[in-house]
Length: 122
Length: 398
Image 1 (cartoon, chains in turn purple, yellow):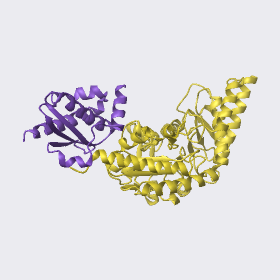
Image 2 (cartoon, each protein chain N blue to C red):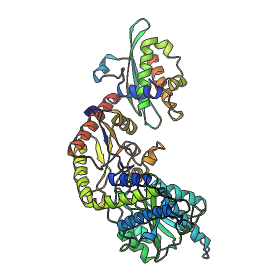
Image 3 (cartoon, chains in turn green, cyan):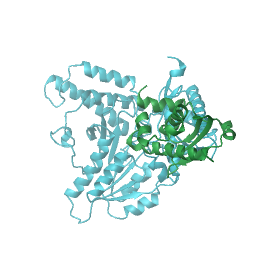
């Protein structure tokens, strides 16, 4: 798929969208929103076993926010939270071919993950 | 084509599919041995005859004379010619010592807004009228503004986002009483509403072909002959159109514009009545979705094809994208197609007092040929489905 189609495809059929019933099963979550509340992302991360995690999201915003949240959850489940935590906003933008005006979306989802990760130790 | 991949086009305020009569006319022109309409030889005169016919057709729709029609590349150029042309003419002959003054409205199309903002940079004094929650201007405020010397009032007939119809008859009467020329942007009203410059004192009217089933790339400006309105040309380099707008005329586009105008106007009453019924059905269906608010005005002051709503709890870009890619995919917009290109929330809805998030989450659905009750019902179901999907993606508040 082309990069721009990656946004559309993930937006239309995100694989890691949280179900409403998930809320009681997840204890390590985090919410981040943009200053203007035009978008927000809520990440849910749960350890399955050593270095293995499940990740889900709720998000509100333009399609790129949904796509970025879904992509980040995929990285967490594939590479673990320690590796994913090293992802930079530019990596999100490059993976999804985000426009310059959408670069803040990478920051949004990474901040959400960082907080979720810090909550894991509590 | 299966039903699942059917596209439903509800963006007729942005552009319309070409009418069969316009397409036939355009193709006939392209196939004919037509010359440059400015040339005196046979092929040139054949082209000129086609243009004369089109001018008569378009003039007839608005109650004008054929020689009062100036062809342009579209309504945007027509509006630029009207605003810049009046400002330049007034400045050229200025002996009053005051700056050129133009009255307009905050909810105008960007063709007007941006042109007036550019003119402001050049020293033109622009007075911006505010609107109420329905998008109407206050006629008392207009009259108060007209109390000061003024060169032009420029307003749109039908708002391109909400379909609000300005009361042109009363506005024109006020302008006439103050001896001020009135420019009307009729891009959204041509062949949708009656326009008669022979009975309504309007000096200038911007018109577009592609909004009425004609080809893109052609428009016109009606320029009143008597009493004369001063207009300095903005494109020079030839004596075409009595020096009002230079450039070789595109015969095929002009002929098709004339055919579209004549055809659409002949069907006006029937089609608009149909769009009114369908629009009410569409609004009734959408209003049953939780969190939907109405942005388009009541029928008494609204153009029939327009339905504009905001949906709480969903992001505007998200729902428009979801609808555009869903099954069936629905082509609509959040506001002006010209504003969509900038990615901004609707300044029209914000001027009407809507919250920024509501202005950003608006859907403009404009009816046109080929839409029936069944299609409207499918759209309602699809909007409800997509709204539910996006709200589920957003989850419950944290």
